[in-house]
Length: 373
Ligand SMILES: [Zn+2]
Image 1 (cartoon, protein in one colour):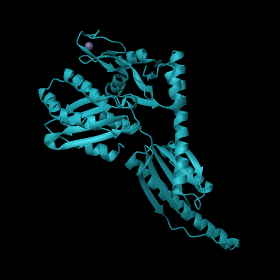
Image 2 (cartoon, helix red, strand yellow):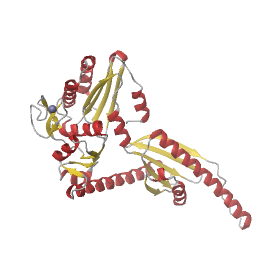
Image 3 (cartoon, protein in one colour):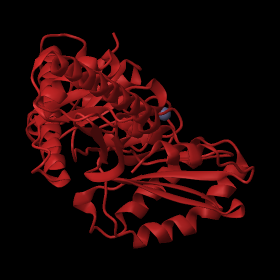
Image 4 (cartoon, helix red, strand yellow):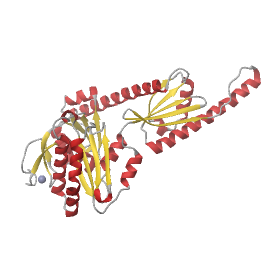
């Protein structure tokens, strides 16, 4: 998982000897093709060397290459990609597996690690916070890539209800409710603090119906926007696992719905001459013109083509010499080049779609983009 702590730690690394940052895309269908990750890495290294002008960085890459290659040869962890940061003289060796997001193969060498792609992936990665709230206590669960990452529990002293009737009872009841409000305010504070610390970007509110409604009412807009659903919980009888199971289902439904809406809109805009394109050729054109705002791809989509590493031209066809500048070109998966380009040169967002949305998009070439203009 790509946490903020990890990004901060990586960002603090530095060495004048040159830190190699190697992003390697893993194609799960080719996982058992001998040395697939190694081939990807070598292709990336070749592209880097082609446009790199500094000799010391070429030497740094050469210095780290064998260690990275050996590591990739032995990698059995699966996943969609790996980010490796290596600098032997400074005793730096960091491996970050990326499980669901799309990272393109990309190599860089500098005095600091190139964490840009990882930071973008971390920003967009769904991080689900489930808050189970009761009148006098609350539990917060942060889940990422299906794993529980963080738990926080808090409890506020709220006087109990009792059943004498009359005026005194009414006043006592108001007094209790003030305590509950104070407790909910604490929960809000905790939700805000958690957001700062972990960057969760989806929120499910669970608990007895009345308390859930009260917390929702009190949520500030920035947190309310993150709410993807609520679930009523019988706190006495449901375990944490059951509540988290519900939250996970809510989250999956939400993601599916959002992805379907996105693909539908993409297809409609592209076909209606709106600000969108579909298919690898048009998408690459838009990327080369730096017009892409949001790149959308079907999970697992790949496309063979060629890329020039001098001027950056690439296309979904085979060529040995770059049609744009005449320099040498090499074969590559152009979907990876498209993602690399979207992230690094136009600060675009990249969205990978799954399941039904994926099928829809595959029927239209598996890739498309919303444009800036
Ligand atoms: Zn070229």
